[in-house]
Image (cartoon, rainbow, N blue to C red; front, side, top):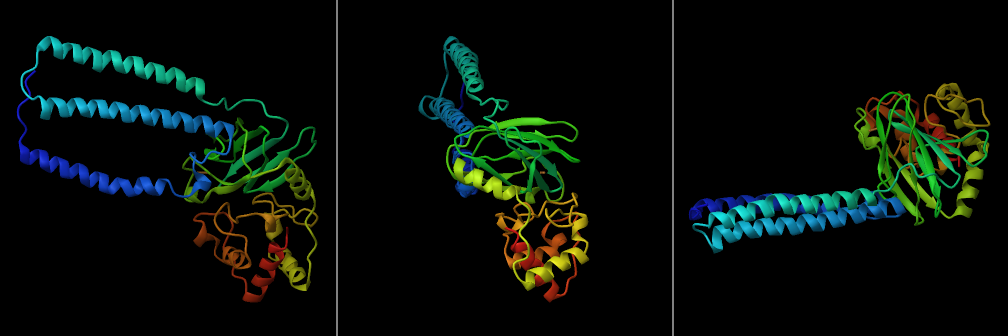
Length: 341
Ligand code: CUA
């Protein structure tokens, strides 16, 4: 093999090209590290920990291989350019190009497969059924031995230190259920049930996100995943199972009337009232949730008002039409919804 001396100008141009690529990607890498709520490296569960270990070992392996390959390239082009003994070259090619990658990649594959968490591990009792809608999450809690589910939406709550089973399905298109801090992702198909189980180990609030492109508002299909102590979780589930609180004041009572007269109950359920619609999210305890519109906004008076009158602006192609309520009626309705804790 003969390696000719490099043209220095071309080499310098190539080097400045590499520098530009690094210049563009380095800030992106830094950005990726931002926001620990939705990072698979900020692990808060057994399954996520295995995935993070796998990532770090694979990354370390890739860095070592990158250094070896580029070291060899540098050696042959800069340190010892010139003619190379044919036999030596053949040994390097067979050893470094066939034997080494086969051994290393096979070992990494076997080890990686053994490390990957089994998504179908049975849970410790609690089953959460999640249906992917466009673009929100229908959530049903089935505690052990329950005859009927406790219905909620757009938020997942879990007890720490227990393995919970998620039974997943979808309404119309394929979605993917993913809480990076707790584990891997699982697709959700119409007409079929898939399963993943997760074992959270740290109390806290994490962010889940649909991980499969599912339409115009795919990016706005998120949810809060709240991991609680078992005692707090049981108390929360009991409260979630209860009917909605009645309006606390005149303003909320007027808001409840607006809810009824505008026909909101045709699509939404508020348990304990005449509203029993099942097209949209259950609103029985909307006031206690962390987000509105599946991660779109906070649940404040202002956000609720903006949502009701401008759904299409906030969430493209959402089924709920934008209303055109007058300021006073809108304020009463938002106040009523905010009070549904
Ligand atoms: Cu649902 Cu993307």
